[in-house]
Amino acid sequence: MKRTYLLLVPALVLAACGGKDPGAKLAELRNERAKIDAEIKKLEGNKTDSAGKATPVSVMEMHAGAFNGYIEVQSQITGDEVVSASPRQQGTINSVLVQVGQQVRKGQILATLDGTIAEQQMKTLDPQIELAKTMYEKTQKLWEQNIGTEVQLMQAKAQYDNLIKQKALAQSARDLYNIVSPINGVVDAVNMKVGDGSMFASIRVVNNSKLKAQASLGENYLGKVKEGDKALLIFPDLNDSLTAKVTYVAKAVDNMSRAFGVEIKLGDNKKLHPNMSCILRIQNYTNPNAMVVPVSIIQKTAEGDMIYVIEGNTARAVMVQTGRNANGKVEVLSGLKDGDKVVVAGYEDLDSGKTVVVQ
Image (cartoon, rainbow, N blue to C red; front, side, top):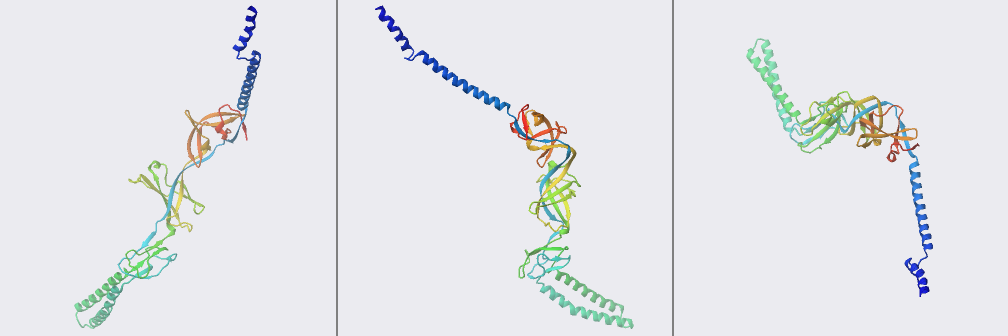
């Protein structure tokens, strides 16, 4: 019985180990651990390589220079002399004497209305005037011969003078049927044709020698724009620009729009026309000794504005104070000095103290 018991013990041990040899199990676990150690080593190696790799960046070296601040707003070209010559009397258009593009002078007749009745009234006065003139001349000759009385002479003269005045008034009434140009200029539009009624008829005349640019600025710009400020007018459609100066700044803010007007007189310019749109850029700030960087590289942090500079081959975060910005550039008031190398590309992947390579 004792012998049988000893043979059963190894069998029970093997059964407790799941029927697997302990040596084989140990070898299997060691193999798995080796694989895990290799994977950990690989990951740690990658982390070390990543931490030690230099970040490529581009830099700009800082030097003080001129910086100009601008206010930019949409503007429109207008004219001091853009008028619509309209009929001063009701009637039918009888003739149109000008065409678009034609030069005209002040007082020139541009078109006429049917003034038949006024003309007839004038004609009826002609024989009366002629008779009164004859009577006056005869009375005057008789008076010179001491024939007749002074009263008769005065009555004859008064009759003649009165008819002359009546004809002048009739002529003025007839002139109301003429459409005349109130200024020297160029015919820009003819809104009538023969046979039309006069109610909506007009002829637009433009004097391009007195053009100006007009714009409205919000009241937050009050005190920031003054007469004499340099200005640049940009005409995208013409692919052209024009330098000028602000000639007028409104003294009051409009109650409705909460804006005030500015004007720039342009004089005669054949390229420009009334109602053209353009971009008005008013230069209202100049710093001849400014440090300027692209607005895009300024990073906002809890402590304030920050940029990266390069010292040797290491990036360093620098807090800066910024001023005005214009055309994608911003003025740096403090934090930089002449010769600093500021990172302008690659800063997204930087931390202070990180190794960099300048490209």
